[in-house]
Length: 531
Image (cartoon, rainbow, N blue to C red):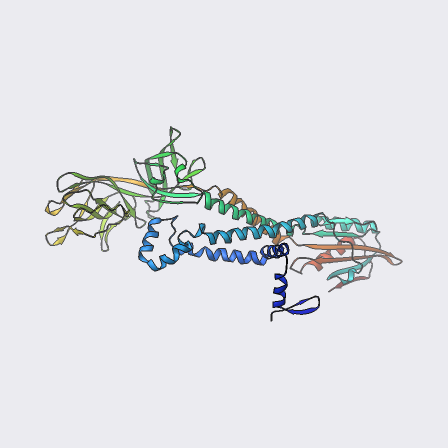
């Protein structure tokens, strides 16, 4: 192992390595370029790119959620010391991932360009001349006919052209033809637009962004980084210069199936919004799969739910919280969970957690909703209180309740649990405060995104698939016809060669071509030679 043959002599691999070391800088660069632009290297880089993308789905990414990254670092301090210098929290913009991506890009271009030049030259070349010994071809047949060479040649051209062969007739009357020239064309189209696909993905990754926000009926949204619940942007996006527009959710309408079949299934969602762009306001409708377009920015409707409109008063009788609180649906009937926080209540801060049920009922499994529409809206809550907390500035999840330092309210010996319908209120034991359920509203979850490279990516995928299909379904073949006059008649020889990976079908073409050129009159002696 490790030996190589050069100029008829056997040399060991160490000698070959030493010879490469003795190359000049220019020769060394040409050798490195040849290695980089080989198809083997491109396949290896493609595999490495897929492998390098795996950590991005396993480790929290700062572009998706800085809070998850902070929580992961606090929970796994040892891994954090390893991951942070390796760029594991921003995999897709890290140096090593970008290096693999750029090397793959360069490798594909360096591999494709010479092939394009060679293929263009091949397309301009005529089919090769008739071989001297047609009988040595894998597909060969011959016969003797009384027809003239002109008639035989005319029939051969008609048959070949009907099968999309490119036909050339030589001065001696022999015919050479070629089909499936665009097999390589399709292969090159596939690889060229694979490069454009990489460009489109990189364009989206660097200059695209995507953010989500929950908007309650009657409230608004402004395209500002502070308005998003979640926001993911490319490295080249200027978050201080997003498309200037604002919108107000005037009304959200949802309808559900009320029949026995598919009862509760969603039938339609429709959000009516007031869109303001450049000081001009107009009313627009947003539906699922029908986004709102503001220049190059799209506003999609992702989901919806219910918000409970509540009024919380503290132990001093002052309003500690007033307004809608978003509850998150947990099932198809919109059994929703949520938290109502009143951190400014005095002398104790207050909080409530529980369920919002559009069509509330008590079952063996506890409070649940029987239908997704608000036919019997109810709030099932438990109350908590505690001493005022010190403001730390650390962000907290509005949908969960940290009960550290808090006590659950009790009514005697039992923990206080209560149910409210619209218009009803509840007074906490011990004069801690009150809560009033005023009604409900719908909320909509919107996604604001900008994907500048998406059209290029989509077009590249389509053309790549088209090129691949052209390459797979094109049969690269050559055929030759030669006539030789003799005293017994005209000898017609037909030869064929299948240049594709599949070797089947060339013999059938040769036999069909021979039968077509001699269909009117054939001698009694027909010779076919197939190997």
